[in-house]
Figure 1: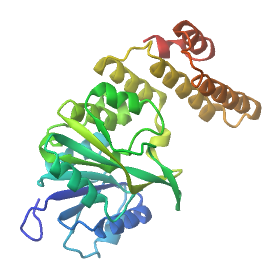
Figure 2: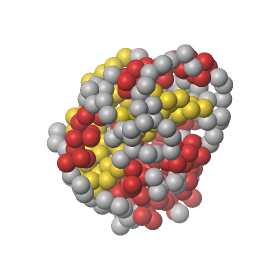
Figure 3: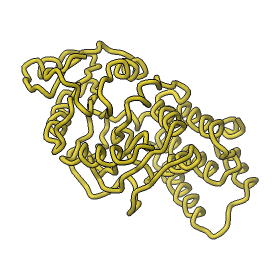
Length: 311
């Protein structure tokens, strides 16, 4: 990759986009307005059409390069980005999210001052469509240092305890040698983080540095059950967590209930039953004793697909 200034910047920001021309314009604007200016933005367009290309062919900014990928798979797109990393640090951002002005400044300051960190991520406020909120991605009031795969997976198995994947700033020497891991299907981000934590420590900044958008076209809301199952298999194979772990059991049951809610949500009585069942089960997590594994297994096998939990 050739930079307009002929000087390699400290940070490369790759903005992945696919068939979202209206959203990606907002994302690009938020990135170009950063307080930290030693970066170069690469708009990596993996669209199935030329709408985004038409918009940015008329866009002139020395900090922005445009690359058309021509409908690659998610893994191929990620690997292509890794091949083009030249800077010391890299961010792979998503087209439906927005950076706050101090996103790069805060993350770079954290990782540059701690040489044993391989990646640093920021907290995020949620967006619902175009409406911004004060709801945070994770609730910690202090920064979180992740040192082991078990620490990472314990957080990933719980909602409300993780920063978005697009909020990470990586050391390029670490990430560029980690091609997309397909062991989790469309959740390859989780497998990539597993590989990153095996090479060093990750810091999560509690300060919100971006807006994470929830919307109807969001890929993460459409993950098939098999991908979630592959994620659990990776967790069990890559850490000391076992299938008898209460956290793993709770995740499984909650996941299956949500799966059937999506499947039968249009049947009012069944949907109501499933919602009440989920509320009831989540309340059980609050009691001061652990639910016996035998009871958890009975619930999963009686209510849902037993093969999902026995493997």
